Length: 229
Image (cartoon, rainbow, N blue to C red; front, side, top):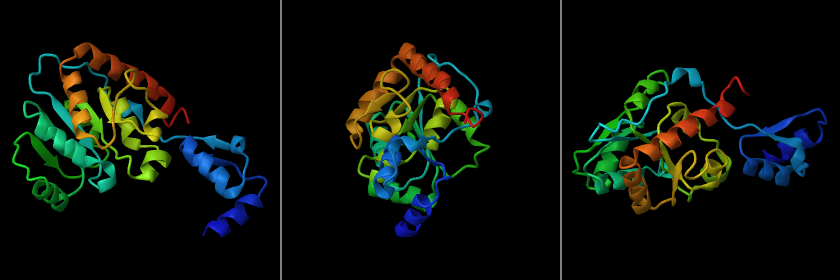
């Protein structure tokens, strides 16, 4: 439908275009020969009021490391699974997907570790209570999926920020448009479970850094609420 869209857009001088990432705006400009400055950037957002601000629980011996989202290959969930095998002293939770997807991961990665729990997809209204029980939130997107790497404004990232938990996310352009490494999140090398493991170990042992990252992200999310938009 590209030609149809192009005719509709180019022929309508009153049309206002927006894109959820700057890279998507660049692509729209290229495809439709539209001046880049005429395309507004409007990322996704979150209702911050549904989440509560908390501090890192230094007295909790076994930390809860959580990933919330689909289990598609492009989401990089395999990196999360491998990190859970590397860190048996802490608990890992995946919230999302269905039983067949969980069974596939268990079989494919020969999972026998007892510290990884699968919870099926939960409604949006139930997620805040799970976030509140987490200690670290992971966004492990792969860099092999060009769409997610450049053109997606990840809703889960904004939810993580609103939950006021330290975030570890893939070092990809779509994420770096929102958070900054060592300021509002720790970024790890995409598709590198060993680096993800290292970053998790850093946070579970560093209360000050965890609180620094989580509070910075919580304050930053004010720029990404639906009210702001």
